[in-house]
Image (tube, rainbow, N blue to C red):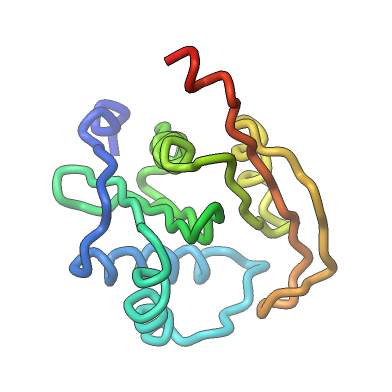
Length: 160
């Protein structure tokens, strides 16, 4: 992936045909992350995305010439997933997906990230999220995590 390809990426609402690509991105991330346990088989992740994630709110994909570079899932004011294909990391695509989520947010956004995911923490903090709560692993993976929050600026509507 070349930096020039990042300009060829556009964010759009996912369609059911994108579900397998989104689940594959997540599955590859799980398999490549040494501290992340696999708690669901790959085909179960795809089923979960088809039956639950795509039904609970919009999923925004970063489309690069017909290939899904990454995705962000929303449910109300919660970002429930943000994953990029490894080849597309570090090119501003995650920031573009977060900007799209912020644009859709009425008052703000919340998301959880794992304590071990230092890169994600740095990214979210650069994007204006602040940590508001920590757990010792109140999730199905049993891993400590951090709740991040971003609040919409009420002045942004007046300035637009």
